[in-house]
Image 1 (cartoon, rainbow, N blue to C red):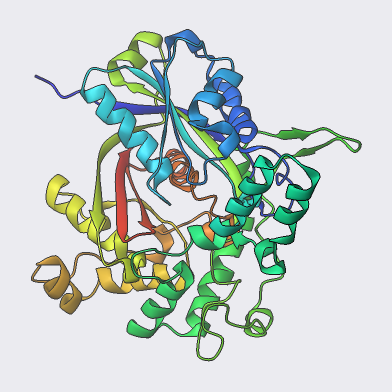
Image 2: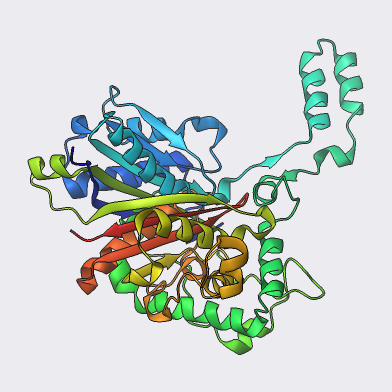
Length: 428
């Protein structure tokens, strides 16, 4: 039997905006609704034809549990269409696509809306368990005297919050935050501060040069209130990034000897992405010309302390399963969690000793030319709304394939917790 193939018909995203700026006050489910509704409008798909909605999200808000379902209903998709939220940290947006493929392969549907959403500005501050218990006792009191006694039990330290974003970006297994894992790679691969800053500057330059191209994948977001306005573009790329400016910044994660700064790390960002995907047969039946085809994918595990190397292990596994070397990709996207992390991936890919020690190969895996890598800039300039980034990379790479009239794209991300994901796509 001929294996069914999943195609990406089209996609759209909101602008990606820095934490605390343009989209900060939009609830996460509203961000997702905007993207999904824009996708339905752009493609003209009948919502009743959709078999399932699958959305990646890392920091699900308490007020919108199973946020995919909330987004689906609010976007006008019939209540008979089920929805599920998936979570693979930074690869959640990719997981939404691969989850749809697995549903399709199991004959659980032909048409899916997938994507990712994250409003990192709304990541909550949390009370300690002891403080919560005191609030619980206060809520149970009846008399005024009991209430006063319960209130007197509080101490100033009870109101020092646990920062949800900081907790989410710290690995509970190895105890290192993501920035510390980047510092480790910078030391082990001898990646200097100057190399990291140069990579970051290039990311901003490429994103600015690609602004008109990227506009085609962005839907406007209309903000109401006393001063209504429209957000039309990413606000992360900056034109004032120079070696001199970046050299003045202090290291964030290792104050004494570190090289990772706010400028050579990905931006904390808000945004959403929606993709319409379906079987190749269904696209033909509906007269839709796909943007791309999912060729194959892999997820791989690695040392959580070196989670940034996840793409190397995922690409290696993909090469062994699919027979495709990263050198065969016309467009390569490696999510820019940190400049040091991407540079370490490139170094490991072309290292014979690394290949022998960690991949079981006789020689290096691949040398990726810089002119094929992150050609429209990356997360250092555009931002990294963690649940949405994987879907954004898929959309951007497929549009770039079409622009170049090229054949294959390789998308990869490192994943907090010590994983990597790699997706191979091709233009039909």
